Image (tube, rainbow, N blue to C red; front, top):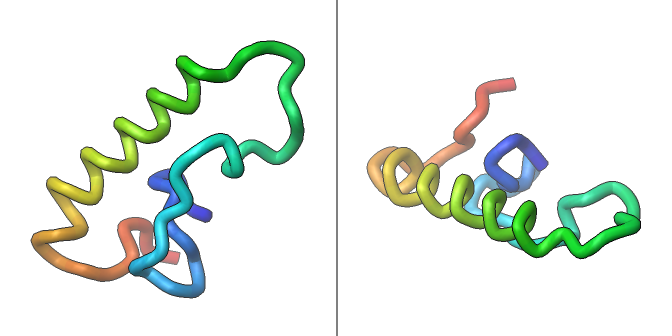
Length: 58
């Protein structure tokens, strides 16, 4: 996944949620998950819908 939680292989797949973390955290990550979801949703709305494709160029 890239920084917008978008799949590298399939550009129209976004993985929103705690599955983006590489390991389990020792505390409740609700605020972090909400911030990542907001970040991704904003990028989808402002960038992806205008020009569908990878949000980060490799």
